[in-house]
View 1 (spheres, rainbow, N blue to C red):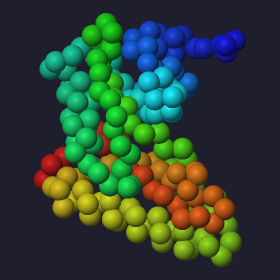
View 2 (view 1 turned 135 degrees about the horizontal axis):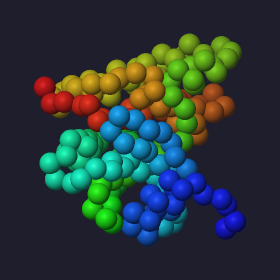
View 3 (view 1 turned 180 degrees about the vertical axis):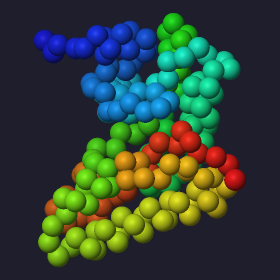
View 4 (view 1 turned 90 degrees about the vertical axis):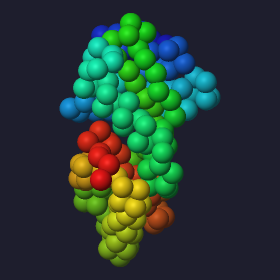
Length: 178
């Protein structure tokens, strides 16, 4: 389409099933890289794809990614992004999973941008949602392990024009069963 793509994007897309088209990187963490991709099987819906490139089987990266996917696949809460797919990269040197893409910004960035009378109402609502999802996890014997503003996202579509913000917790890479 005439769009210049970086070498890492080209290399990563070659490793993925053809159903995914890389749009851009979303972030890099201790366990892998997260990409925004279009899922051709679902009408080019945007999803977040987390990938770990390391030898499969006993590698800590692969074990962590599969554990995170299994943890997320057992959860059904409005403040947790739904997982969709798990797979192995074509050359077998890594794995990935996809989740719903949260179109928005992290809690701190969002909170600093609030203005007007509704500011405190929105902050309290977001805090209530965060506590609700943490209670949900706790009742299932799960500790998130890395709760911080960067892992609490506010969906952009839900938080505009005075509407109720919708918080989503993400990055369960360090979660543990109690």
